[in-house]
Image 1 (spheres, one colour):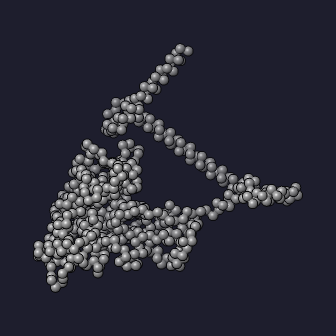
Image 2 (cartoon, one colour; image 1 turned 90 degrees about the vertical axis):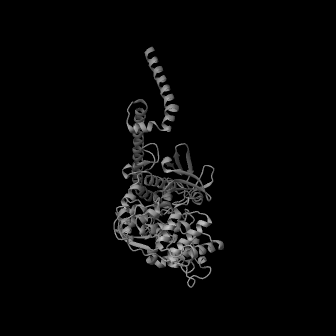
Image 3 (cartoon, rainbow, N blue to C red; image 1 turned 90 degrees about the horizontal axis):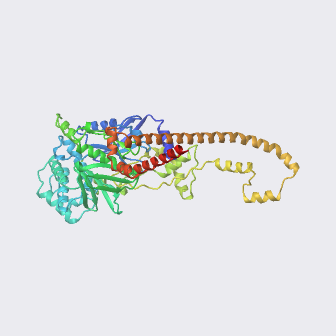
Length: 568
């Protein structure tokens, strides 16, 4: 917490920030943004660089310091959303997969979606049969290296490329056979189009899995596709609910609820932040694919009560509007700079895989935020004194000699892998003056500071003369402590006032809730807001099981009290 505050305070002094966005072909786009720049500004810069008009399908993804993935919200400040230390690193990815990718207007859009699905295939997000996998890989070969040439492509050439997490020799031979015999003469654009048409027919097309557990504790992956909500366990799809059948989504802590017309699905995310991210992705996907117009988008709450839970609103266009807008595009097709497929052994980055050992050392150092750098920044702070353990001292000293030379590499790089939160090893800051204050207070109150001092005080009781000599020193000490006592009293008063304010606010909220409850239960106001609350199952259960018995009990007590008063 302290490291974030320190980094945040130093970051607030800067006016401009460097942002690096990793694109789908593994190239990088770097720009500078102002401190108050919105996410829409950065996204527009990126789309202008890519010459992309059908941009509503794409988004910018980043990871916070807690290793939780997020989509950049375009209506909010970039700097406020990215809590990590600059320079910022993000990824440009497909956020909403097209319902029919082959129907996209421009070739540049189809090419970017092709790159995204190719990544999905490699990382195991796009599951398929062996025959489909061989065909998809052959389309990739044809699109990126062209027709088979015996002079350039010797026997076993397909084994040099990495298309999937795991390969077999039989699959490699099948890929080469299809590439040689069935795809000759296809242009890159045609191969990419055929690739998209085939990928669209697969059950896991458009799946961005969120790891969860069901009520029995079994691992599962939840995902949102162009066609509905999907639950995967292992390699099987166990649930599929169309978007028009999903009536509601909400979350409470780590628990995610999806309401269908007949059932309620309950799953548990690893953390509350992951559950909130899952909920926001579901709200955005349902609005994008289900609604007819963006004017129909409403602010959604994660709870039934307006004062509880998170509130979120999708801020973009919906799929139908995007298709209508794409049909109006009239321009010369932009030039596409395709990245040719290179054998994975000579160029590991083309596989998009997590092969950290093959990354150059300077890049490898930028993959994770250095813990030693965090310790160094805390040590230099005037408000904290981190305690270094012996195991960290050797690694700490060389870093202090490097100084600011490596500060530019303090960047959180994002990959497509599943992020597991790592435990913090930062030491707990200890105030330097806390021990001195404790010893001083013990001396003032007449309490010895230790057992040895207690024994010594019992053995050496001061005489009257010594007491007179010590009188002046004690008076001076008490005067000095009196000033500190006044400061402590002021702090106590502030604390009491803050507690009183909290109590007043709590009482006020309870009073407002009581009024609202009386209006909901006793009045006949037919307002849409009150009507929606009255129709919820939770309110009906509360009304019949709790409120009505309580009202009868209260009325009975009031009648008994009135009868006693009348009798007397």
